[in-house]
Image 1 (spheres, rainbow, N blue to C red):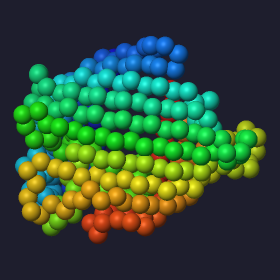
Image 2: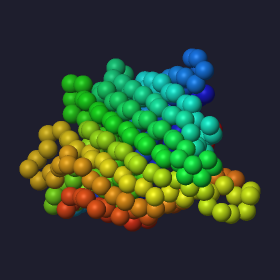
Image 3: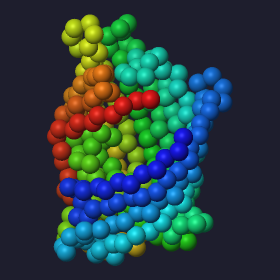
Image 4: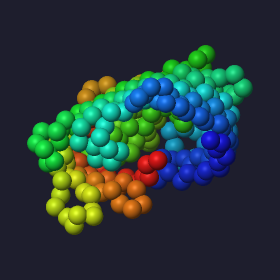
Length: 270
């Protein structure tokens, strides 16, 4: 495929807005049964703008545009029995991104994700074990805020998007993390509805942390201690794509983390 994009993002949880303009080429193929590989070449000009006057100094110093030329590789394995709400099988992926050469930004970024689904009782209870880790390293330069990881929301429920990770103390601005991990233990079950409505409920425990910034002043609040949340949720395979609703409650957290009880996500799978 070929991508051309121009996006404008107004971020309520951040003290700045951003825009992206660029394009890319991507292609993928099946290696053997259940294994696939994908590649993407992308060039983007990204701009941090409309920075609040009271934003963290790190963010104020990042204002402006920077070009990024990157190549991304993804290796995937999928033995699940269905795309939405699987009840058995394993999904795993490794994603590697490298930026450098033509652009202003140089880094190596890697993430690993795995999910396993085990039927506890036939066509009823399913145990879901999931986990992911990520790390970014600047090459000859510090990492930039737009390239770091912002954790919370759907991967550690009970915390706001960008609710975990380094935060500027005076302004409480999230700064993004160089390293993170997130995991879940989840029991899923079908919800009795009309036969043409596919909905499953769940109870879960999430554990995760995000930490690490470059050249951090003494005002940055940062910790790699695990955060823990519990909650309940439901997922619906709607005609427009999967819809996920969750109620999460942190039981172990840092004082500077940002909580969010209700989370909602919507997306289309291809």
